Structure formats: C-alpha cells, structure tokens
Amino acid sequence: MKKQGQNKENSELIFAPEDDEPGVHEVTRMSLKNFEFYGRGLEFSSACTALQAKEILFKEQDIAVAFVDVVMESEHAGLKLIKYIHQLHLDSYCCQLPAFYA
Image (cartoon, rainbow, N blue to C red):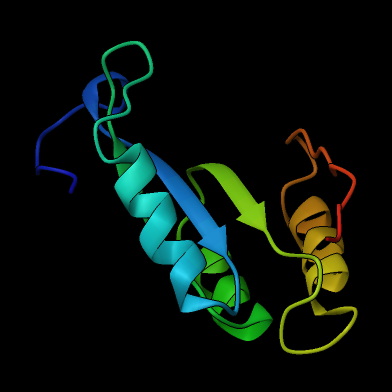
C-alpha cells in the first residue's frame, strides 16, 4: 500500500488484473507477491467486471499494468475495456496479446 508522504519513485507500482475468474486473481497475487521492478513492489487493484475495472481505472490514474481478460462477463467486455483504457489514457502504451484457448 502507498504510504503518505512517499514520493512516486519509491511507491509501489499498481498492477490491475481484470478478470471474472476469482482464481486468476488469487494465482496472480501469489505469483507476484515478491515481485519488484527497480526496487518497487506491486500494489494490486483487481476487478471482476468491466464496470468495476472502469471505476478503478478512472479513479486511479497511475496504473502501471492492466492485465485484462478479453472475455469477461460478456464475449466482448474485455475488448471494450481495452478500448476504454486506450481512450482514457491516450499517452499510454497498449499491447494486446493473442489469446490461446485449450
């Protein structure tokens, strides 16, 4: 969590997994709990629906990574969320990875 008075360079990076499967959030937190990037840890800000994700993304303008499931509560919810992120943060870099289905 961010500490009051802490400058941006030393604060934790915000990682936002956006997925409708609770297990994805649990595994992501477990896998990345000790991750550091240039001495900065991660603060998680998770959402289970596109609407929750939009609320988080609007409120928290300093998200380092949003890891978005393409198919969330509907077939195109994740894709629409990615479009929203890109429009909200025009100066950000968006990368869409191909989906692999088993």
